[in-house]
Length: 301
Image (spheres, rainbow, N blue to C red):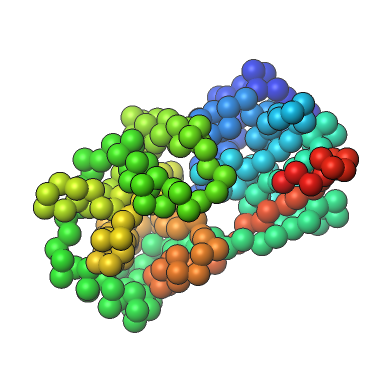
């Protein structure tokens, strides 16, 4: 039986054991990810953690709502045994009615009629083939940019702190992005530090000869997958096509392994083109939205 469980009632060991039984599962639903990025989250749990559904619930002006936090791409049902789409439809029916607004990104399409659904792109690359085969599938544009960047002889470094990477992002792109607050960056930094401390992730960067950071990428490394979670670059690194060089090096490093390189996707055409150029496949996820607020609160999004 599916039941609603508050944050302090969740058995995190059983929760994570359930999720870890799913092959190549994305990391977003694990308790440590939710604790960092959606403090106070609740859950729907089937029987004794046979299937679980994390709820990033929030409260504002007395209104309870569900929203996908920044730097957390998708959630949904985590079930080792049930078909994902069938399980998602079942769990959505058990979300408590006091959540009047639901704006959630999930990994599978739903047939639940109460929601408007928007498909979003997510680009993935299977690294099982040897590098030579993977490289053959790069676009001409991609290969040219890799060669162009390599001529600059960039050197990869892991000597980059989470704070330094986030500062680089804020100084170069942060002002262009609406909706990300100081607390979101703090939560991201906490997540990074947690992953770095427990060897669940790493930061790869590129510096100038004067030791100035011009490019940085934070990876989460889960079993069978590498998630390119957070990227920061500069005008200089974009002009030198540094991103092409760095991603190509990561592909070389893990080619021939049963690993999925997850670029996470983007609706920005230039970024999507960058991701597609490595021969990736679009594995979409879905934004589901339902607003049961009364007017004029219904105008909130």
